[in-house]
Length: 118
Image (cartoon, rainbow, N blue to C red; front, side):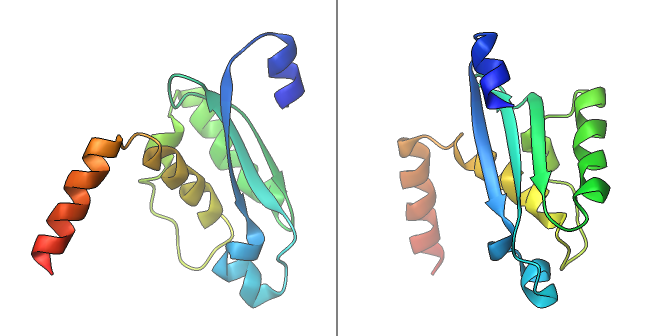
């Protein structure tokens, strides 16, 4: 939990994806819940995670495997998840992390490239 990391003075960042934004959860009418992943403030090392909602127990294994193997949240973003599944929220949390790596200059360059391609 965040309060445990705060008590140990471990700097961290939190990434969340709510099931209300997940296509599978919407289709199933089970939009309450979320995936919350905490990573080291300076890397994508996963320090902990909370998953709340239907089938949360089935989804947490992906996170625990990543933690045991040293796989970071940024790498989880590249894991292929069947569509639509609620576990896709884990990948989407990884996408949120990867977006933080873009500097303003990089964003500007990418926007320019996209404009040129259109």
